[in-house]
Image 1 (cartoon, rainbow over the protein chains, first blue to last red):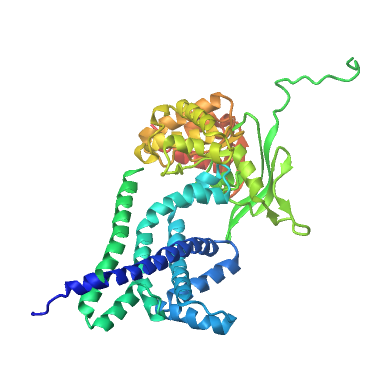
Image 2 (image 1 turned 60 degrees about the vertical axis):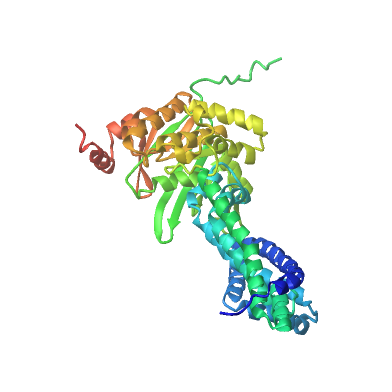
Length: 221
Length: 274
């Protein structure tokens, strides 16, 4: 193999990739935060006594889980002007798509977690006179959180990787910059390798943090 | 000046103690299964009621209806003479229970479960403090003090900072009792509190319950420990097929049962005694 890896090119283009990296962060963290928060509310709707809430949230969750994310992102970009006459920026469309997709998966994580807590925990707390909301907040969720940590990390990792799909909407995130640079310089090997390394450096700490947390929480109780 | 003609009411041992909880016409269905078939019952202050019966007789369901762990299908439950729940006009059987009312009842009617139901993510002390802090809105320091007092009472003051998972079943059940006691309930319900314990751990839990009996607390106990029921109770109820088959003093029900069914049930317990 006599291919020579162009280190100078990597150094030269790195600042541009870093700009893309920042946009990736701007997509990733908010969509994860909004998505999980919305997912929690959706899970409560899935578990509620109201048939309407249960049905509605089920339809929503299945729509997002059973269609490709790529289509969801593009769809938000093109559908909004037609449906409600508002043109979203590519970034907003991507953020919305990622957040809503995350909420659907997050809802299933929360629902599974809440349902996995034995009925006795609800009864033990209710027998003290605790309100439903207090039981959830003080007794159920703290236990659920511990159980759900691996699933949340998994989701965080997925969303970080999914955010690269925003490049098809010309959101100037890491993947977009990588594709642009590799076609400008005809050096996809150097550029895309660097992009992959940057993604790894972004995602690995999240995985590591969750493993540490899991170990710490397993030691307690 | 007291009116000489008006009789003066003097509280005496003869005057009946106040009724706390009153149940009338209680029915419970689980789907097509008619578990409780019309129960009328009341508990007065200081009473200790042991509820016995075969498995599936409805005794746990009955106890669990009293603090609304199970919702009665029909019938009313009254606390201090006030019926609980709201009835919509025209539908006398459809009683709705607002959450606030259920919480108030449960605050006053404590429960100890067969499976303890301690909160595994909290220490023993935090378990005993939880109701005080969350329900009674007590200050942490005050709650801590009261929780520790109750833990001392069940002999577990030294385990305050341990997580329940580290304790034996008997110790866990004593923590559960302390957690219920901390709320200072007017009635304590025990739902087979020793049934999931290894035989050698039953004694320590029964000793705690007996101690509470000596304090004159009002308690209802669903149990298979007939020997304990005999010494513990002021009243014994034999439940079969969802109705009170026989009610009386421990002597009447456990030693001289009038009903054939009660006798058959008791015989099964004495079959292997030696």
